[in-house]
Length: 176
Image 1 (cartoon, rainbow, N blue to C red):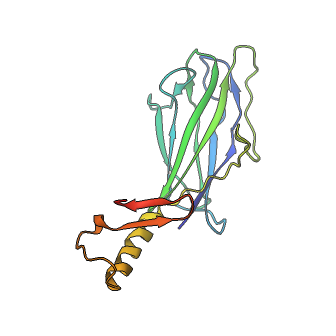
Image 2: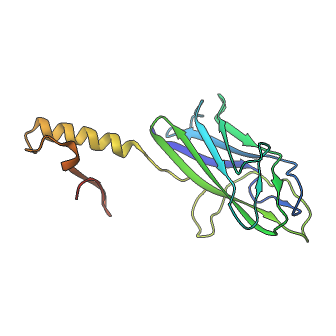
Image 3: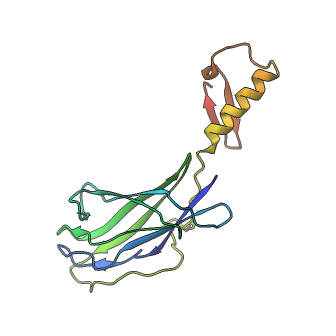
């Protein structure tokens, strides 16, 4: 399974330093076919220093499970008094598949609080909001090792001695 992660509400919102978020940050987790992923764990992580805050629990990390609609939300963050961009690291996990993204909100003394919006995120480097990270490579590596063993390609009995290269540039699984 491949999971995709998209911020659908709250990205780019601006708040006064020291205030509480009046709106949430919502993400959508979908599979490779674009269907919502139910019961995915989504972690929201606020920065340890600089412009930041805490969630309702008083912690900098909140973990939320997606519902049948594939959405997970956090809200009510208490912002600290340091102005600047707040980069929230968001990770979604379902079985062995993972996706990650960064959503940026702003703490500004001159800005009027806004609720943020929906739409496509444009990363500072011009990339897309969708970030695809597939943990299935590990499973593929195990399957390739089993295939190599069945073909007699490896004389070692230790799976860690096998290496699998995927794509170009290559990703090596196992010992090089």
